[in-house]
Length: 286
Image 1 (cartoon, rainbow, N blue to C red):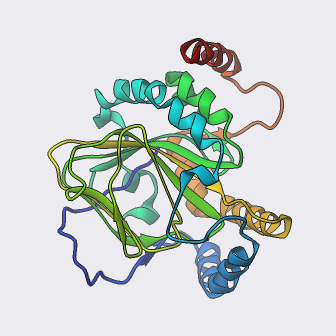
Image 2 (image 1 turned 120 degrees about the horizontal axis):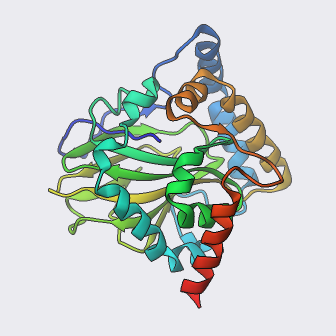
């Protein structure tokens, strides 16, 4: 489970240059990979633009992904399990302690996250603690990453950007302090706030920056999925993700959170719990 956070700061119109993630290489081979990927990034991202089946704007309409309607309908189920964790959120580790490459944008303990899965690995204990949310996540196609993202009062995440346009970030608002002017995200030149029960979807390859200048925590379900693309684009995206999965960046975080490789086919270690949760969700829906 990882989080990020950073020192409190007021937004400025003339923002500093975006920080690329990952920020702190961990070994020579990964450093070489990072340099090589930065050189290729413009070409690869243009390929993604050409292959994309949806707009390539900074912020996108969640309705472009039909499954988000069901997620939004089930938001109260997800919120209930998140609320249980918020009561003991100091036990959720900050991202900077889990993944050292995020320390430049997460130097303090204010951005915490409770991971369900990431890059082909899952945290079985976390899935068992929140079985309804885990069951909902299992129904999402092309899922890459999923976690509860909790930003404490005074959190500021500096301007930064992701490494590829092949992935989309989706935030389901769970606990959101009132006031968009004080709890917001800027993606490229657009500023938005979160709303409980609503979805915000954006392209993380654009520079983005986050503030929670309220006196309460902000919690969202953070989901990352592959962008809908033509088959050539999908092959490229899968190749990029497979390479990233083997880097020290991902492996360091995996060890920190006790994640294990997600099983393909057959029951997962918590399959019974998840199946029971799925039946409970259907009962709530009906």
